[in-house]
Length: 195
Image (tube, rainbow, N blue to C red; front, side, top):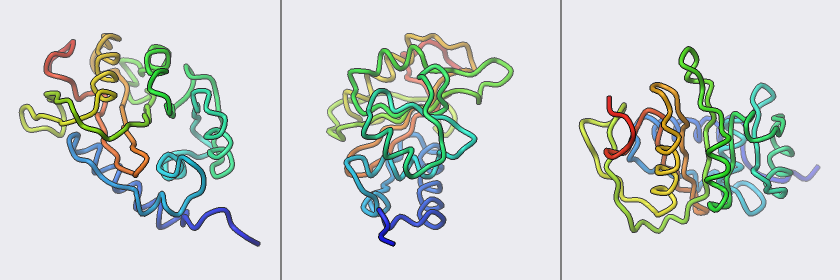
């Protein structure tokens, strides 16, 4: 039987998970899942590598109207697609949809802040902006050189004025496999609340 990919569902998912955990713990760190994405099919190899690592039959996702990605994710995971407000993971391949998606994404509750969505956002990787971040995983303040998509996502997230400690995790993914994470408790210095 011919397989669609060479992605190892044990070793490669473990490697991607460790990289993702490293990026979440160090918000200005960019990691690469390029080696794992090359083992996958289709136009969204990096998204699929992350999807195969994060999704299973106990969590839900939304492809945010990307039918091709939806079919690919359903083919390689047991996760169910649901409407944006109910999804645990939101895969945003078109940055123009960020505003509509972020407004609807679940942000957790004061008693269960971890029951929030994670947005996986396709990013160009062309870094022309700088933002100052602070929060868990950062010693004082730090500057992040980033793309306009990152700045826009942070602005939109700030506009939601989430009550601490609720919020949404942002995971930026380039086509080449670079991944940068900004967890829900990491903020811009000019954001809405300060710890």
